Length: 119
Image (cartoon, rainbow, N blue to C red; front, side, top):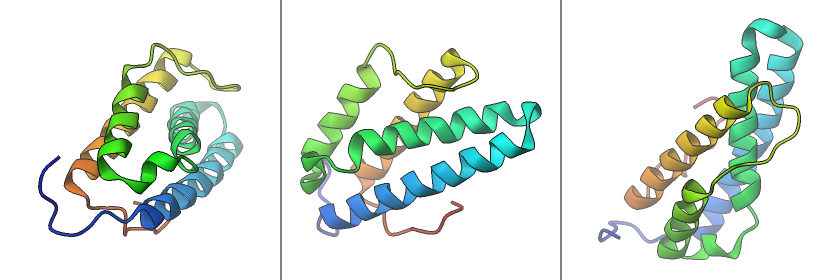
């Protein structure tokens, strides 16, 4: 890990993950109501929900190095199981993309203070 300019805040990370989890649920519901043409948006929101669910209550959020290791494990995972996605391949691609985004945020230790619904 790089030398952070600010200390790692596990509570802030858990709060950010919980809020993104809730926002992804709302995004899925909105995409579901809009229909077939936005199925990619649904899969993207489902991928965000999956990633946040896997991490939000984890003890690894207390330390930056442990959280980065957990993210690396999840990115390296062979498959991601989720019900009611439109395209499993696209869903898995979105999960990996979202996990990589979290890994970049973790490495830089920034972005977790942004808790608005739309980012």
